[in-house]
Length: 104
Length: 422
Ligand SMILES: Cc1cc2nc3c(=O)[nH]c(=O)nc-3n(C[C@H](O)[C@H](O)[C@H](O)COP(=O)(O)OP(=O)(O)OC[C@H]3O[C@@H](n4cnc5c(N)ncnc54)[C@H](O)[C@@H]3O)c2cc1C
Image (cartoon, rainbow over all chains, first blue to last red; front, side, top):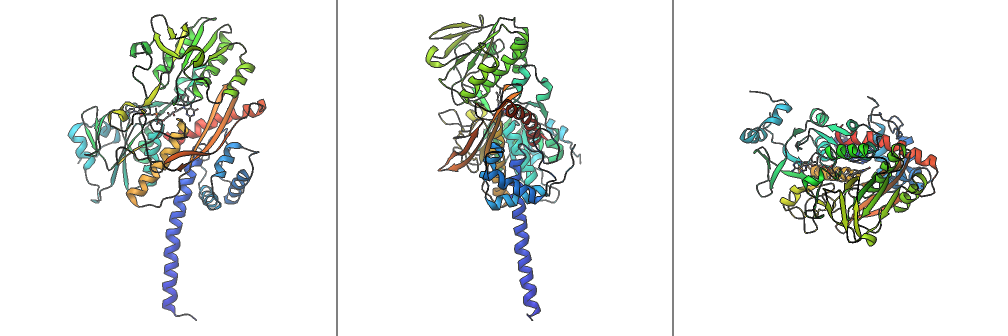
């Protein structure tokens, strides 16, 4: 068994690192989602352009990966998705999935 | 002590205003102050994203008008397809939901060394960072005879508002069989497809109400944005109604005569029943006066932070900048504004920096139920904004695809104006 003190320090460190990691990750997700907001309302309202609210992280990720892979379904989303790395797709999907739906 | 409402605050003048702005915060912690001049698409977006992403920053927005009228979709209004009121957007949500101090005044001068902005009412605002987004102005003496009085007879309608209404009134009262002349400007100018979208939508209105009317475009250029898409649509929707004369045939319009509503070119004089004169452009007056523009008439900026290359501490976004490959569009202004807001927030608060993503997406109407779209991504390369990937609709697209784009455009207007002002 490891000494208690050492493991406590170790846990503290991990916690610290992951907390600032979470903050930066949220910031990155929010900044990327600002791009989405130019066409998609993030309050879930709006018509004419499909809503991206309430879809869940996995569907958003898969949709972005599919848009990146092929132009066929939508050339606008193809251009947007092509500019995103895997990490950025994960980060924006996680952020957008957390946005609540309260259409006005 | 009196606690000011934002409305009262907006009415404060002179020394009182300066003192109020410099008042230390409740806990004695001075917040960084960002002043944004110009509450159009670029400026309103910077203000909103700074206020919502950096709570440690005080944001003040200076804009003379109580309500902003969008240029985008104003061509639908000209065609009788949208009420004028639907183009207007107020600043209440920016003040109420985001805590932005909105001051309805014009900025008269910028003093970068003292880090102050002087307003028209005589008051002065101090800033740590300044953002200037004044849009466009028309070049002096670009068209002989086109002065303020001539604009009331032959409107430009290139800043939306009263000018747009005037042009609509003239189109409505024009007799069937009349000639509508549109003078299209030289590059670079605000919204490259918009003169040709305007011709298309006015044609759709004439077709319903004045089928014998004609449209003549007198261009300062020999080619234009998405020309194949427009010319294909003009043949399909309005055969024989729209004629486009490139500069190589006329030499371009050099002067206008407001008394006779005439356009003068080397190749002849054209007399209109209704004329829409869109002159050559440059960055807004304030940018010129403040030394933010170079000899081109536009403002050079750092493509990552949008800080002026000429005045440190001053950032610029929107139509006023030298955007490299980025066209002068509302979408680009909004995209630049977000990158600029995040860069300023990182500078002032030490928050993390991420690579910016810059885009243009544009829906353009060929007819009320026929729109095309394009999308371009941009990246800073060697100090310039370069396009990376670009797609545009094809001439042979089905009418169903175009109908869907026209519907998507309506959704875009709603979401986009909500992103800027909501
Ligand atoms: C007919 C037409 C159609 C268009 N269609 C589209 C479209 O479909 N899609 C698209 O993306 N773009 C479109 N555009 C382009 C779009 O309107 C502009 O690119 C956009 O408005 C630029 O934003 P901006 O913030 O730079 O300038 P503006 O939106 O013009 O804002 C400038 C603001 O600064 C204020 N201001 C100026 N001087 C001062 C001062 N001294 N003090 C304080 N405030 C000041 C003004 O009052 C104004 O509110 C169109 C343009 C036209 C003309």
